[in-house]
Each structure stands twice: as structure tokens, then as C-alpha cells.
Amino acid sequence: MFYYVLKYILLGPLLRLLFRPRAEGLERVPASGAAIVASNHLSFADPLLMPAVLKRRITFLAKAEYFTAPGITGRLTALVLRAADQISIDRSGRAAGQAAIREGLGVLAQGELLAIYPEGTRSPDGRLYKGKVGVAVMALAAQVPVIPCAMVGTFEIRPPGRVLPRIRPAAIHFGEPLDFSRFTGMADHKAVLRAVTDEIMYAIFRLSGQEYVDRYAADVKAEQAKGRRRG
Image (cartoon, rainbow, N blue to C red; front, side, top):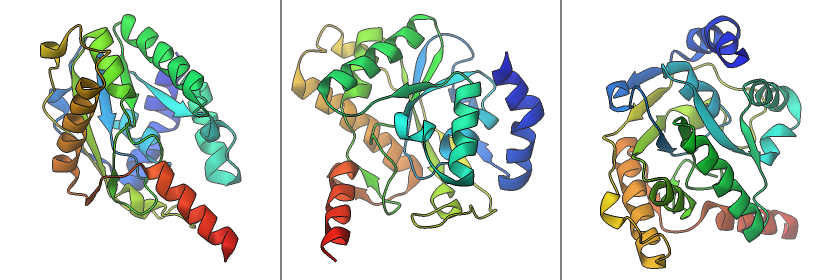
């Protein structure tokens, strides 16, 4: 219930006023039934702006750090995610990843929309990074379509190192649903999971216009952090 209070009364109108999110391809999001929305991830604003333009409720698998982030924007994001019953996931290790998949499948089993960031973390520099295969595992296990989504302009709202967000417009592009029924029963094949994930990331790449990097964003962030410590 509070999800809709946030969306239509408290937060949604403010977000639409400040950032003027422009949605393209909303008709490609199913009006009912389970589906995965797989998006690039550029900013803290992403999980706030996407629900503001969707007609349906959507549940995010949100990294645990979003619920404990410092600062004004961090506290605001945590407050909104908790109030809207979004799911906190721990990304530390294989067991945590399996738990996130179980949570996601539970949402899909209820016929709901599930939002996933296949990159696993925010882009450190605005480029699109290699996707992790969890999105493929869920799509094949639940046998649901995947709607690729591109957030455009949200990196500039709050790039790394900036404390307060810039007030500027953003766009959300939804692509044609991807059907992976041809891979039914093959969710335990690593090559299939990689192929499905890469197809999803290519669709996001075409929608976003970002430069693609064939590396995991988390690895790049770790290298950057190591370099700062050395410096």
C-alpha cells in the first residue's frame, strides 16, 4: 500500500517535477504477469525514477549497501526502498548470490515485475559493463520474458564523487521483450547462461548508446580502490 502512496502522492510527483523523466517504450512492459526488467545502472536515482514512470508495481533486488549508505541521498534512498518493501541482497559470495536468486524467483512466482541490474553494481564511469549470469538463471528458471531497459542521463545527475545530485532531466527506454523459451531446461549449462546474459546486455547496449566494456564493473572498481590506496 505504501508503495503507491510514495509513487502517487509523496515521492513520485517530486521526482517527476525535478528530473522530468521521459519514458519510451512503456507499451513493451506487460500489463500483467511476471517479467524481468533488466537495466543498466548509472546512479542512485535509477531505482527511484524507473518506478515513477511505470504503471505497475516493480520490485528491485537492491544491494545491501543501498540500505546503509551515508549522506542525505543515501538516507533518502534507504528510506524509500524500505518503505516500498524492496529486497536487500548481500553480494558477498556464492551463497549470497543463490539467496538473491531465490528472492527474485519468489517475486516472479507471484506474477510480479522484478527489476535487476545485471552489471551487479553502478557503473564507475558511465560505460556499460559485462553482465552477471544471475539474470539468465532467473529468466530460464521462471520462464518469463526479459524487458531490456536503459537509463539515460542519470550518471550525470550524480557522478562518482558528487555529494548532492544535479537537477537535470533523465530518460528511461524500454526495449522489446526478449523470449528465451528456446533454452527451457538448459539453465544448468554455463554456455547457455552466458549467451542469454550477453543477449540481454547487447539489447541494453543498443538502447543506451553506452560504450561497452567486456569486464565486470566490480573488478574495475576494486582496481580503482586499490590504486587510490597506493596513491
